[in-house]
Image (tube, rainbow, N blue to C red; front, side, top):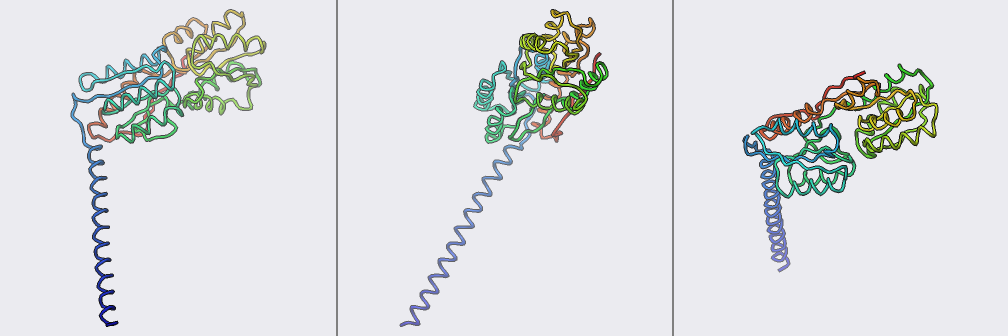
Length: 315
């Protein structure tokens, strides 16, 4: 009797082990099939003419970003429909706009972030929805993107710093007007400027004016009262530089003003002497590169993870 019980126990255990292995194998196969299907769907090339591409720009109250939009729309032609939204420099509004584009089921989203940190959760939501993302001019602190298209902001900041050193020499008092806190371009342009000038100038103030012309003028007015001997100001975009130059003109002082972007108003200001120089980007070309990269990617072509747009110091 003990022998029979022992045989039955062995048989039961063998049956249990066999059944367990079979069930485990079925679960693994199911998971593998699901992953493969998702991957295939995400990588299926789309034909031209039926592409829907969402575009979220930080603001259209700045000629630089208007030029990016123009480049995107011209580059899209008849190959893609573009849905453009203006965040008006509001990071919360931009997050809502991107999530709306996700809900609409666009094929790809081009984002020019207001704030590189604040946009990250929206980029991650697009990742979860298998909607590819391209960033223009400013990047994202997290989340996966297909490509980042921008000028080399660090190099541009160095160009500005080196030019200021040539104009005013070492140990001169200098002011920096910073862009929107949290924007990658703010960090990178400041980093490049610091690399070129650290220990060589007396940086008496570095204060944000949020990439805005009116704020640039107001902040500069206040800083001029506090720092009467300032010799130069580096503004991290042209809008702030144009505002700062108005404040300087009203004060009657002779101060070197360097901007960043190369928009039409800034080029004119350099020509008439109210600005000393601008680190010129090519925003329209940047927009064209963004939409061309988007279309190539959606057609199944390989694209570069980072595409640099050229810079030029206009003086």
